[in-house]
Image (cartoon, rainbow, N blue to C red):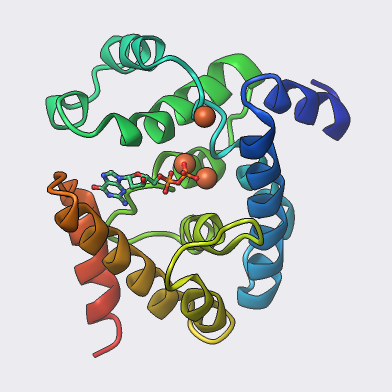
Amino acid sequence: WSNREELLAQVRAQMHDKRYDHTLGVAESARQLAIRYGADPDKAQLAGYLHDYCKCWPVDKMFEILVRHDMPTELLEGEKELWHAFAGAIVIQSDLGITDPEILQAVRYHTTGRVGMTLLEKVVCVADYIEPNRNFPGVEEIRALAQEDLDAALALALGGTMQFLIEKKKTVFPLTLLAYNDLISLKR
Ligand code: DGI
Ligand code: FE
Ligand code: FE
Ligand code: FE
């Protein structure tokens, strides 16, 4: 790709229409959050465009990529929902030539979070929850909080995800709990 239109055409080709709408929403929300909190708006927008690049790929294809890149068994044996973030960070590097480590990390950790998240990682992760097409119980509270306190918004979002996973008797990936604790202790 050599311009934004080409990049977006390639992103669009990876996913169905609703996922593409979500992608554009995350890019715009990430840009706005970046402006508000002093991250790089262009990087935030680009990370938004790319964050779900692999989301609609067959799980076998993601699995193969993760194995080839020696990802931890914890990830390979865990929730398949998490794979697109880690595979995405690898694929946007190999297939799209994205080399900026900040963008790669923002894609890699956009689902799970991690301890010591960078501002850009937080911006993309929160944008993923609050973009305009999102509509889940509690989204309005996260949206409002995101305008006041990015860490608090992210803690609320990750806490909600953990509650959801527990209710569904699904495993909680360790990084998510660690990210949550990290964000909560920033408050004290
Ligand atoms: O890709 P999106 O749907 O835009 O959003 P996402 O990348 O945040 O994926 C969220 C999905 O991942 C959601 O259905 C919950 C699921 N999930 C499964 N295990 C975990 C998890 N999310 C987090 N944060 N932590 C987990 O351990
Ligand atoms: Fe995602
Ligand atoms: Fe899909
Ligand atoms: Fe997303």
